[in-house]
Length: 368
Image 1 (cartoon, rainbow, N blue to C red):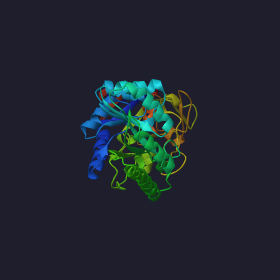
Image 2: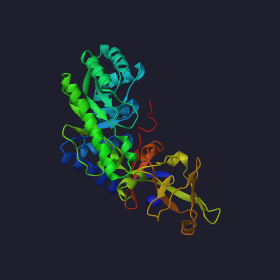
Image 3: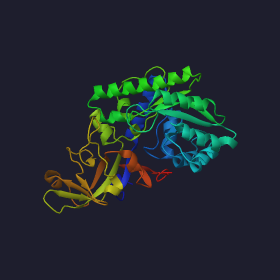
Image 4: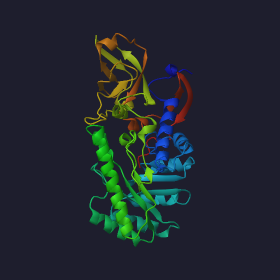
């Protein structure tokens, strides 16, 4: 089948571009002699996770317990959940996973570890945890050294919780003013993560893992500091408008949404059949990843989706309107691919203009 014969909207992945992205990031990790543990929340497909491991990745990262369960059911057996897992229901699900795979997850408080210690009290294996370090994104993670030391001391005295390492996410690099600012933020995040790792060693704990990760700085050769053991990065495999803007090129964008022109009601307006339910409404307002509109028309001359309704995309561009016809199919590169992957049951792998595979997005909707 030809790609343009697909019904729309459809999520499409260019196989050759994707494989170049996979090899490129693996080569980067190998260059600095660190492990690559890709964050699979970007694509949510066990088939692609296996492809990443085959290329050299050391395990995978997920965002939710439900994603971990699906990945485990499909043969992935070394999984890190880069999130704080709280509550007996979720912790019992992780405890069950420890019976068959190597699984670890994030913590950042004593209160959370108290729950873990209680739930794992009858488990044959301790819970493997990594402490998240807040490095500037203003999200979750330990901020104060004193809180970190107390948390490390608490875990040291737990019978059913084992500290595997520390991790951080320098997501604020998306808002860097320019590449030098991105480099500065990235290096500061590395130094802060390593500082907390050294604090644990001063408390008598040797950490196996010091994990960092965010795609923008890793698209540039900013280096990896000694002591970091793992890169935990996700978007690189498929890329999107945000990441394309960070490198000033969309040539590495493997994923697009195929959409059909359904109406041209005015001299400047074009309507296509994908809206917020197929593209999201996400945009980035500042920094090296700042976006224009709601998505970019692939191979166009700076044509973007200007507005979306639930099931309609609107383009205001008189010149482009005169170039397309009703029924024509357009490829739209999303601003942010990760939530877009969560909107489709399947992705179509293409080579040139041929559809070569249909891949189920098995972790779609696994939000718990």
